[in-house]
Image (cartoon, rainbow, N blue to C red; front, top):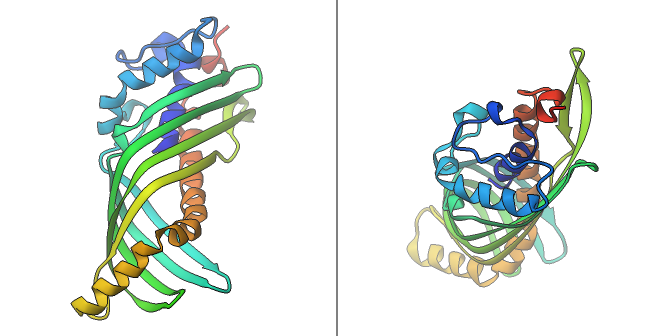
Length: 245
């Protein structure tokens, strides 16, 4: 979800007017207030982001498909082996983008996001040992994150493909902070309510531990996915189209 915005930042700065849908406000690289122009342009595109932008092969933000996240983490007090699949999130289109910095000569793009509330659901298959809690099983998972702060950095390079120059990106860097969270694991202990409620209580009472373990895998998965999306979009245009004379 974060790098869909990054792709828009890049396109708004670099593409000629005729290459983008009519609802885009294109910002000129010579604009002395380039960063503000791009910020305003991205915010006006929130309705289109929610439903997707087929012209750029950008899928909808609502709902947003997180795919599968595989987690293997362990130390003296915490061990979590988990596979989270069929993850779907809602609320991403409520983002606010700010502090955009576009360094065209260095081919570097930086920005920050705030997402007030993000809900998700999917399936889990987990084997964990967290403090006094030991559990192995599978079932549905749901939850929410609140007050997400995100920092994104894109570093581009020029690459020759089939005799033409194209923009490509290194693996996108994402820093993620989560203000609050709530998780609910279903089908715990064959749906024994007492044990299930107690387990979910332990999970949420130690949410900071879970987030610390889950965050690297989540960020890595998102970074891989969105780097592919960003490079796919950029292959739709040659470097000369992105940076017209």
